[in-house]
Amino acid sequence: MGKDTIKLTRKIQLLIDLPTVEERKEAIGKLYHWRFLCHKAANLIVSHLYVQEMIQEFFYLSENKKYKLVDEKKDDMGLFNRSRINCTYRMVSDRFKGQMPTNILTNLNSIILSSFKQNREEYWNGERSLQNYKKDMGFPFDKEGICGLKFDPEKKAFCFRFFSIPVKTYLGRAFNDKWEIMQQLADGKLKLCTSHIKLKDNKTFMLATFEFPKEKHRLRPEVVAEASLSIEYPVVVKIGKHKRTIGTKEEFLYRRLAIQAAEQRLRSGMKYTRSGKGAKRKTKVLDRFKNKERNYVNTRLHKYSRELIDFCVKHQAGTLVLMNQEKKIQIAKAEAFVFRNWSYYDLMTKIKYKADKAGIELIVD
Image (cartoon, rainbow, N blue to C red):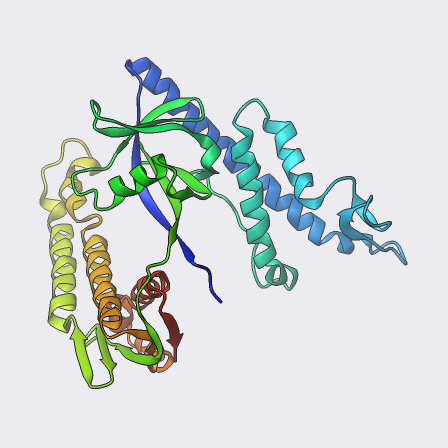
């Protein structure tokens, strides 16, 4: 039986809540420093984990050498003087303790160890290169990193302390369900799981992961919805005698190609733009198209997947089957135009998590 909860992430912008410019700069600098230390710690942890796994390869000059990657107190053949997860934590803690919150190091160590275990076999067989963490990576924290969360009517924002740094949320004009989620978190009705802080384009974002209860609908597992994904109609779904098409080729593809064509025309005309401040001035007009296509596609796919799940819930379909998808994937890969503009995997991902949240079993044929 599956879990009654599902984990979903919301992107929330944070602003430093300090009165002077100097104090805000100092706080931002502290966040950037923590990110830099996390980048160093992450690469150290994954390097140590790899050496631990490959340690038997270092014993090629010895014979009859036996070992286990466990605490020596629990097993006579153990190599460690503490638990395995504590080895890498103590290594980075001794090096960075006092420079950043230990809560960040604890969560970082746990996440990397979990990821490493999933890819262990591929590392061992030489089928995958060791993961390299970039300097712009987000750094993790859990509920201990948020203190005193409450809504401030004067500032019209949720305010709290991120460890020692006072911050407030900026939810924007179209904040959707974010205000309600933050209010539930402040009231203790919602659980905050391991989340991340991402610094990008001089802005601070909290990628907050919440544990939501699954939606409760009167679904019948014996009622099966058969859906098909294609470029002619993004989604075609059939439940018994009921059939529905969601979206059209003209609606989805035409607008996407129009955005691509407009961007290409701007690129062609850039050489005639008056110079003055180098590339920044010449490419200024392209900034409007930087994320336009991606945002449009993301919005349409969210709408299509939402309509599909709502249709299933309306007819009490407890099982959703995506028909003949493997064959369509191969056709799409053979056609560069289709593969570039279909966005199949994004649509699949959105259907999967919405079905999981609604309690619908998803089967890919």
